[in-house]
Image (tube, rainbow, N blue to C red; front, side):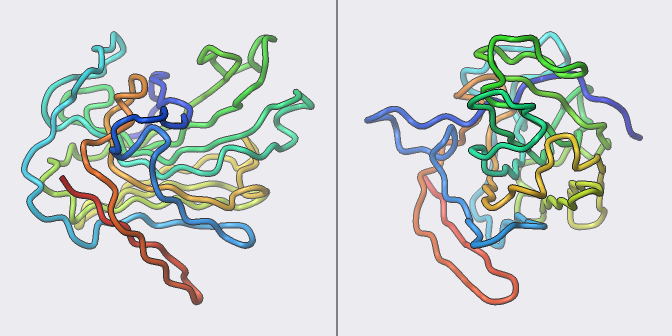
Length: 240
């Protein structure tokens, strides 16, 4: 099944406050940065031990279908957010950002959504372009169509993957794999022209939207190791 998700916001990245708790998310994370442009990124969990449960903390309930309680999370693969493209239409300070997402219970209990969310950060005080919605603070966003996927328990984290790809002049694609099946959706790269500026990728498991506390997990960042070659990568550890 495919459709158009209701516009629940997955917030703009923020820098953590000085002295804030050293937990993952809300701007505190490792990213992989390429010397050139990125065309595709795959996020995986090579080892996920002692993952027993998950629950939402400090995130208000949504009127658009968002559900609180256990097993509410997102897998997010996020691009860099400090470059501009022609989609900013000359708005000073405007930059583009794109998220590739798997979100549990997105619209219906027991049913997840796989989609992309696009951003014009710093668009300014003028009205957002047609088809875009205001996120407040001068930022605009919109969603791609979505593909429905199984609502996977957090205990299955080690078998889950999320990938994003961007093709200049073509389509961008997000693919979620639960170890047995793949679920994907495509959208035109021209929405924000990600392929022309994509040089950083962030991947992690965090809360299901709803402000800064919704974009974190309760794990502390550990080490980060780097591998080069034809398929460069980073590997990070998180634990509590």
